[in-house]
Length: 266
Image (cartoon, rainbow, N blue to C red):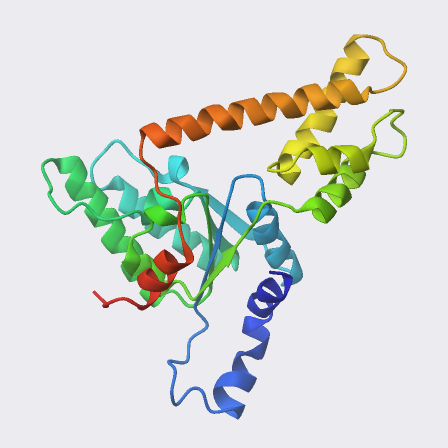
């Protein structure tokens, strides 16, 4: 994954070599446009990676959430999306759509209301803007299975973010426990015992355990407090999984990504 991110970050710097010196301008459309989609479970570092790409390129990042551009007035959302692209171009910022499935989801096939028309209009405007935009656009989503295949094909690179394995969890535990903090936490034990958690979960567990220790006027942060926080996280995730079963949300597969990227073009 690190190599994929570095390939993306160096894309602009290597355009002239690839397109002109090596002749790919003859077989591929010469463009500075590059769509990048970071997908995977919540808390696995997608937003952090987007910021890291911008930092590596010494550029600002313009973060767009659907809630920021959605309008209750029909036709306003597409205009707001246009403004986001214009603002990024004017300021030289990298455009980053967080929770992008809200914008790039499948178009409505049976339109029964003005809202359905507005949704399709928004999708169409987004497709047009992506075709014409000559710069980086980064997307992040927890639910790539909701993407319209037309958007999948217009995004050059899809990078999957996985849950951390034991070695990664161990590093995360060590990273988020500051040297100044007194504690009895056995990081190897916690890294082994608790799989299925993210760096965000670990960070929050340490922080909330520290606040609990301070509230109880303890001299140190107890491992039991940290485990309590992690157990709460796992319980909430289990409840969310049950909710997903009720709403019949799909789990994306490699086959889905391949089909969406290489299926019949619209």
